[in-house]
Image (cartoon, rainbow, N blue to C red; front, side):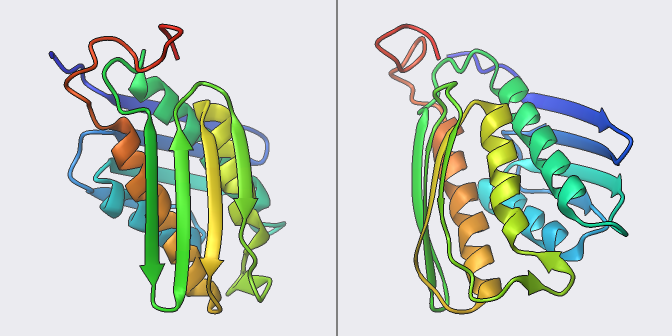
Amino acid sequence: MIKDSRIAEVQRKTAETEVLVQLDLDGTGSHQIDTEIPFLSHMLTLFAVHSLCNLKVTARGDIEVDDHHSVEDIGICLGEALRKALGDKRGINRYGEATVPMDEALARVVIDLSGRAYLAYNVDFKRHTIGNFALENIEEFFRAVANNAGMNLHIDLIRGENAHHIAEAVFKAFAKALKIAVDYEPRIEGVWSSKGNL
């Protein structure tokens, strides 16, 4: 199978934010993350390292108002970049699943790159913020990714108490599940679907 380059760049500029995302699905985990939101930058770094995607994210937004707009728009751009980089999805596994621990926390993420967007998010944090970062925006981030990538995405916290550990487990599990889903299955010549397209 001849593998196409799976690289994408997405820019988004609104009255509230300006975001640039560059993504290479077949990278080594290199990353350059500058979001003005330190905790989100940390999570995106974990995503890059554990998915082995090369990722550059630059974001400027109205964080003096709230971090919601920036978090959501970064998710939109990452989802669009995933969709573009995947192209016609020929030969990919399509499905990915990972269960990842972080100390006492354990999170499971299951992905289907079906072209149909859906998010099931079952994560209960025991607090509302980490630093200035509103933890409710993690769900908004993943909803934006799923909607714009055309991804069926299930995120479940199996157990956990520490909010930082929970968030890390979720992002690492997402990274590992995505890596599996985008990897190639050499026996598949077209797309892995009885319908013939995804």
